[in-house]
Image 1 (tube, rainbow, N blue to C red):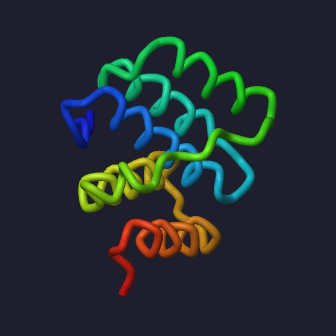
Image 2 (cartoon, rainbow, N blue to C red):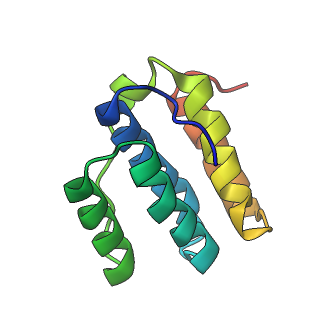
Length: 112
């Protein structure tokens, strides 16, 4: 299991929102990716109510809530490392996911 990017459950919930954006960058959520997120949330102390909303959005194909990027920019490296691990969870990283990761890096001030 990937350690949480923070000890703050609010930060971790925002990081999880971003991870879901990464996982769904290719408009598909692999069962392994969904399970990873469903397991990761409670392990990171993300409130159950947040998990219910996030997983419901995924299951129904509804737009995901946007993460608080200002908060996530306070610990960008931890968020990026975790996003990369999630992207690799299905055993395949496609070009769309790679492009999205570049956008994530840019948004978090870590673009190159």
